[in-house]
Length: 403
Image 1 (spheres, rainbow, N blue to C red):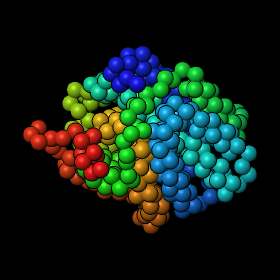
Image 2: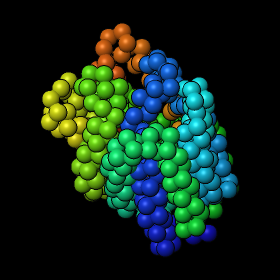
Image 3: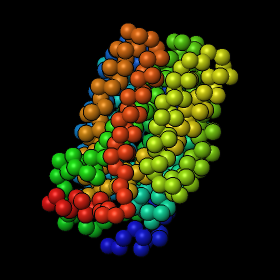
Image 4: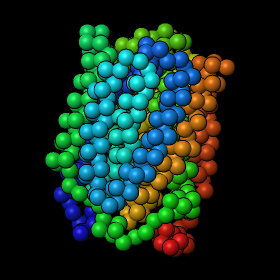
């Protein structure tokens, strides 16, 4: 089997991944910005919502580990496609849930499908292009995702008042199934032949350079859980800012519109400067923008601060995705990213429930100010990974040295 650099037709994978990722995100974003409010409508309290997020994170962590093992054994394509079918069926079934406990269980299966794909998503993009093009490849996928984040909330804001939450969830499930079938048909395999001959232990992630990748991943994931990815944004927008479900969806769409342009710029910067320098700026910028957004009350200020937050998010996502792929050896990428994802999920699982309790005790903006903590962790991991040109060894050499 030839290497990705020797197989130029694999560049088509980036286009396929971009289109299907955009479709998946568009389907998800029809309801994701108001997920916390959906759970509330089913009778869940704020602490229950935080606990549910923690359960989903732990489940996702375990599934990422097995997804990485399967990716190195079976290949990238089946592991990126078939779990998408599980996600589609599960989210459609959520439409039938009459209470929050059943919804949480069904949504766990949706999470499991996405988590199994986790180690493969970055791998298949990074392995389809030469290393120098990875930043741009991830930026193209982020642009497509940005389109989904725009069209999804806008579509949801139109369909939710007309069809209701149940119908929107069912439609979302159908779109997930379409994306999964598209990946099965058009993606080409990228798994290196050497994955079968190189051994890997889960404890390898506790040694450099994988330990640094783990530290950065924990920092970024915790930061996102406290800002754009967690339940706190929609809760704060509803409880403090007084925004309706449709308005929250529209806010997400506006931020994503700017995010599409920012993603192209971010990809250029990451390709030219490298992922680590960009990430050192993007992480604190996202935290500061989230804190600034939480203090706004005027509609224009809310939108402008959200745009800043989303711009920082794009830089953080593209640089962190590129950092992970470039610092993990090709031969063990699936297993390593799966193990890192599992460890990352377990370590960060308490973050959301702790922030939920802090939110109840201190105030709605507390999680956004708490985001400073993972920023410090991520910056420390990046600083520990700063390497001089002399005596530097490639990631594959370091992993091999431990065998």
